[in-house]
Amino acid sequence: MDGNASFSIDFNPHDTYGKHILFLSPYQLLNWNFGDSKNIRILQFHGDFYCIEYHKVEVACNGILFNNIYEKPFISVEDDFFDEITMLFDKIAKFGDVIQNYDLAIVRTYLQLILALCSKEKQSTQKSIEKSLKKPDIFNFRTMLDTHFASSKSVVFYANLHGLSVNAFSKKVKKNYGKAPSKLIQERLILEAKRLLHLTNKNIKEISAELGFEDEFYFSRYFKKEVGVSPKTFRQEVGISIVAEKSM
Image: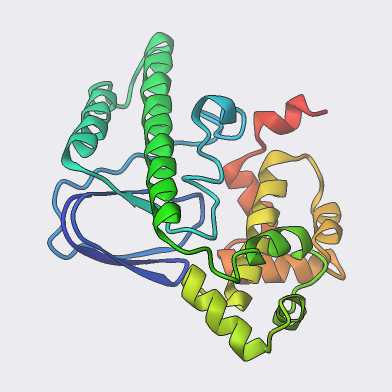
């Protein structure tokens, strides 16, 4: 997208100015106010067409462009990079809706190139930002959350690990990540639930237990409240990845 825009993703507000590329996963909630944005392109693809986990070596975008609750889901880019990605979008658009098998291979290659270029661009941008910023004393919250999210869902637990009061801890997390710790805990649980539904053949009862829920019915209600659909519907719509089949 090119221009100024305001939008929210999963109720987290964002404002952008200039040229940006936005990345969303299935069932993320996007509320949009285009502002004076122009030259907006949208590219959607299903995991059956291109699985970002299966191709993680080639594009390294899972956890960088997609499925990363700790960073903003978009990148700001310069004119030349934006033009390069726009050109690849145009190449894909030329194939239209009805294409042959050999055309699919070409489109898949263009898509892979877009993802690889954007992954490289975001990683380069992040390294520059990290060098210019002093490492905050709350930085290891991400590691702690990734380790304990299934067994410990209370903000008090993580505040105690940092030796801080809940109020002081919450302020530091909010300043560093732009979200309250309770929101990050919630998002980390849902992210893992989506991962298990898409990348494994585990049934909903097994997934519920792995995520520390008392029973599958409570887990299903929790998931539907946050995502908008039940775990069963999510799996039906997104599908089970080829990664799950190869791990059997």
